[in-house]
Image 1 (cartoon, rainbow, N blue to C red):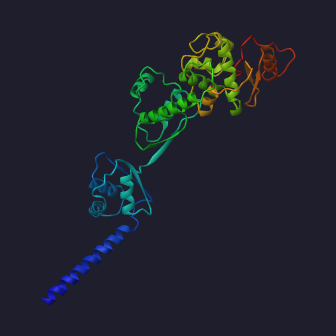
Image 2 (cartoon, helix red, strand yellow):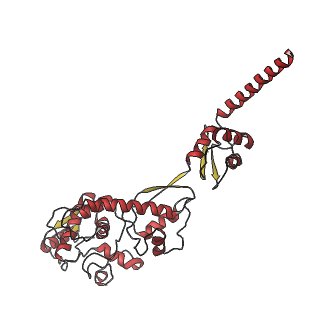
Image 3 (cartoon, one colour):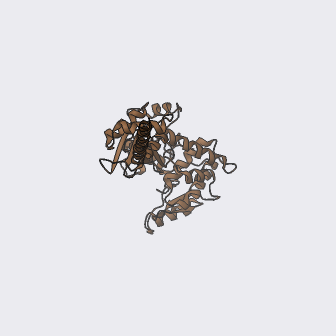
Length: 346
């Protein structure tokens, strides 16, 4: 009897030692087949599936052992689907924590201020491991899918860098960008100066998109906005080249001609009064603020100096002299442009 008792004690000690050794072993860094592994965990995956996928992906550990550890540590926890990165130095516990947190592989895509919606779509199509859910969809169909039927997509997305999980869809990135623009636009509109000749936030967005395209140096944004606000107040046409270029679409070859300024389109602000029907680009925060908090200026004209900055003029005579100086070399025989032409100065 005493011998049996000693045997049981010895077996218990041995089991405890083995368990302790196994526990210590599982706290050590995982052995990997490469310095960095990627493991895909499907929707609805169990702990066993996650363990199998990790081992299949290059974790050098029996799948049953890894599963047993997962089960012991996280039987009541729900792991999240996605693509995960396993790196040298990670333990089994680190891996389980990552799966439970949903700490997936994160990629980024950057949308740039002044881009058109066409350029946004091209950037999303080039983005690494971003599922092209919107491929083949029109802009109208995309906006409907985003819950904005009948709204033009132009200018409705905020320029920023966006994170996305590997193999997630481009529509999710667009939704995130659209919602951020909604917040930025509303914040700007709520902080608008009094008595602006703008009916609503949508008109502020359209004006901001023009300011974005016209600005060469950031410091000029408020005064450029002030020029357009002054023109809207007195019913003067905006006469800004970027709207003409936008209206020409793919037919524009990069050289804006005087004939383009007289070719009527819904976006030609030389031939039509007021703002164009939609934004012409994606404005950033500074342009949104400038559109609703323009500089108090008497200027009605501006022209590019050639160094990125603009010269502002309150009268056409002064503007023509500035055009002659900065764009025509100041020659004495240079003729002044017709009234209003080069109001935007591009």
